[in-house]
Length: 160
Image 1 (tube, rainbow, N blue to C red):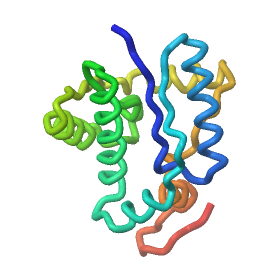
Image 2 (cartoon, one colour):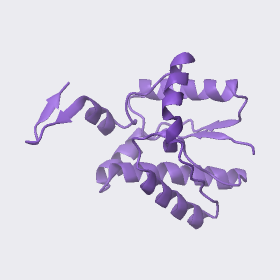
Image 3 (cartoon, one colour):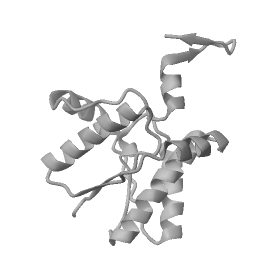
Image 4 (cartoon, one colour):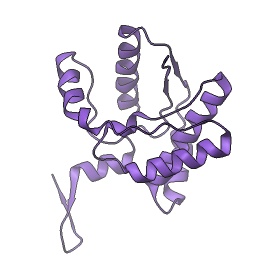
């Protein structure tokens, strides 16, 4: 099985975060001798507009990223597509699976689900060992805000 890595970073904020993630992505791909594709654009405004209009910003982000991966996979003639989000215990696997399968059926390219969460701790340790950049939040500006703000029961924000 040949794996090609694909990076579309429509949600990453700020730009410095995007650059750090991109640098680590390229390093891992090159050290593993894996082919990769990176979208050069940084469509922050498009993402923010869509996320702010959506009922659920995470669902919007998942769908947009999965759709991009499916389109790229179909265009390149790949057998299937998946997402690295499946390694995170913080992501909604049920929603990712449902969206991935729906998009795959719509576009005629299968979505592959694997529960990689058991490898999360190992991946974190490996990133430290290899001195790779480790993200501190999901990626979007709202996620960054939520990472550093704790909401109390009375609805008031407590800043860290």
